[in-house]
Image (cartoon, rainbow over the protein chains, first blue to last red):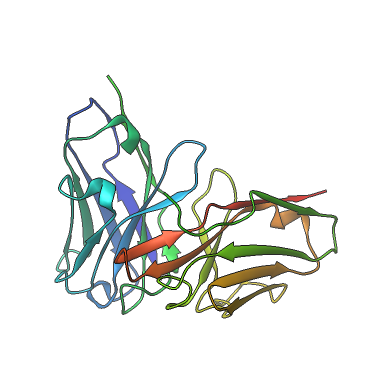
Amino acid sequence: EVQLLESGGALVQPGGSLRLSCAASGFTFSAYAITWVRQAPGKGLEWVSTISGSGGSTFYTDSVKGRFTISRDNSKNTLFLQMNSLRAVDTAVYYCAKGGNYVYNAMDVWGQGTTVTVSS
Amino acid sequence: QSVLTQPPSASGTPGQRVTISCSGSSSNIGSNTVNWYQQVPGTAPKLLIYDNNQRPSGVPDRFSGSKSGTSASLAISGLQSEDEADYYCAAWDDSLTGYVFGTGTKVTVL
């Protein structure tokens, strides 16, 4: 069974840092792009970042460029999101989602999400 | 900010047909395929339609998608109570070099 399991969400102060992880199983991890999507309380879905299967290509939404870094360890079937200089507006549930062979493909499997709260 | 526009709500009685529109531009829907996601409140999103009109295994054929130019639509025929959820369209945007989601539509079964 294809599964994604996020972890690392926490309460953090503005300006702080956090590292999210997404453990994958049930598929050839290195063959697929993986995406982070977030959802602020009571709001819609927002794309955050995507990384290609090899890790050689990364893409970010403008509001996190320079603050967030997506990476992956294909030997450990794990995706990461390093979040620095966190702001209150980054408060959200963060989902990782499996894409296709190309970064623009649909996301067909989603994790259950991990909650990030940025507050003093 | 969402660059794909959807109506905030849609509703119907059981058995009715409901259609949700998604309006974009030449850099997203006009250039790439459209996907639709269903999200029951409190749960993770689920892929409902991919590549404009394809259903993943396990998705009932009551759900169908279409695309024309810079717009797309999702139709739910034979509406059922379990279809009550939020629905999002999405597509890759070549100008933003990123994925964009629609504003979301809440479907209520009356």
